[in-house]
Length: 184
Picture 1 (cartoon, helix red, strand yellow):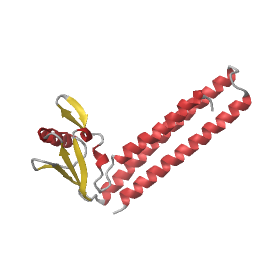
Picture 2: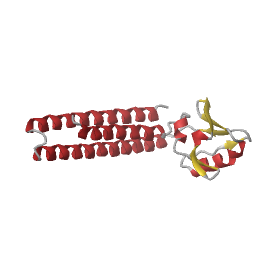
Picture 3: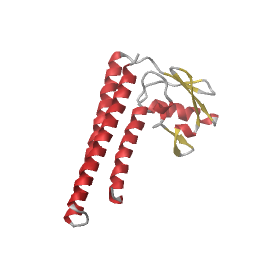
Picture 4: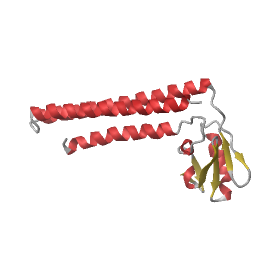
């Protein structure tokens, strides 16, 4: 495909990458440091990602431990976690902050799988919109005699093949996350 279509290919891959990072932030009962990816802390007047103000470790299967590099940040980290939508109360022992993840109830697991499916559908809609834009570009190029009818046919097929591949990839990612969520 031409360089003009490279942008559309990159957009499709970025859409999948974005979905994967969103899915990583959904907790599945086990402690996963990625659930903290979207939390920012007021670090001397600047909103800074939590990962940049301390060391995050997983000492137990259902616990995260945050060891700030600056002990003065403990209250700010605790405040940021409380303000987030994590739904976990942090415990502060004066040196570290611990987050203990409760077991997910069956009902909560089902809610999370619905959320995962919604995110997957949104990603598929984005992929289809990118396909539509790429198809319109190809038709415009053919209309302006910049590519031949054969090129249009080939590019249309390539665009559709890539779309099908990306939709399949999204479906696999959503299925894997849902399986992880439903595993007790």
